[in-house]
Length: 369
Image (cartoon, rainbow, N blue to C red; front, side, top):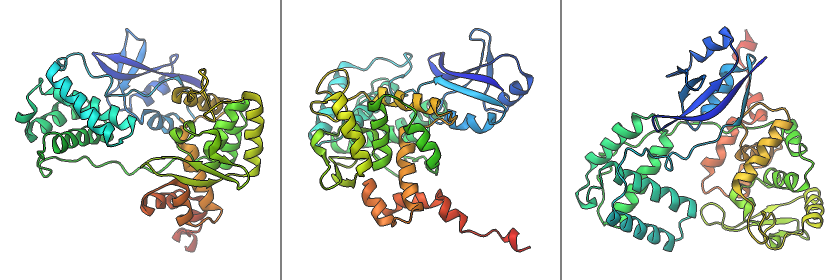
């Protein structure tokens, strides 16, 4: 099969995805089934609009027809790539945004939320032409949705992020609520979590010879950790005597305990003897500093490629797989909820929709014919 190379591009200040491959009429016909495709003589590639889910959308289209090489593709932070055509933020408004940032930090919002809300609010204010916030109405927000987000085909999650940032700013800084009835909130797509088979997980975890890389990926799967939770682990968070791992200040500022197996403890001891980290369990090039999130993602990407898996696997897939495999092994949903640190049982219940054991219990009426 031929290989389609997927990479990022930018046309007229807008993020796009470039597909390039040697001439093949069958593949060209498949590309033409994609929405809003164009051919670029300049880039010698087929162009489709960028979206956060583009790789997942392309995989089923070309399955069995071509290999997809997306090693050069990276997710784009749409908030950081605002078009230069928008005016620069007014200094007075910049000062107001900084006060909003300080307000969120004082209330212990996570740094990632602060960053995204600051960028989202700044983008909205730039779109209004640096309009005085006291004069901004729902009409401005609706115009932003229609003429900026919808016209550029940005995701529902991006739209919700900006709405949340703007509403938080107006409610807590200006003490003025925008009419929620007039703000049309987008419906987030009901997406099922991606789950790997145990054989695929094993292949990924054993792909690297580097013991540090194997230990990081193994710990994410073995304890169902989020990326930030893994990177913030400290040496004292591992209680090998009790067989427990302490996750401090996970999502929602919650602490939790997760059982850790002797097999994993043995791997971590071997890693410690080799690396000798000083403070954090996994440190980067600077002693006492956390490992880079981007580098961790690259570690996974390399492992997935070595394992021969063609899906666009993310670190969160390992967490989803952990939860699903627990469910298939008969673990009660209430315990899984606690292990994952979910606030609501409804969040955990989504794994019943992807559990192979649960689905296989369903008998098709076709079998009764």
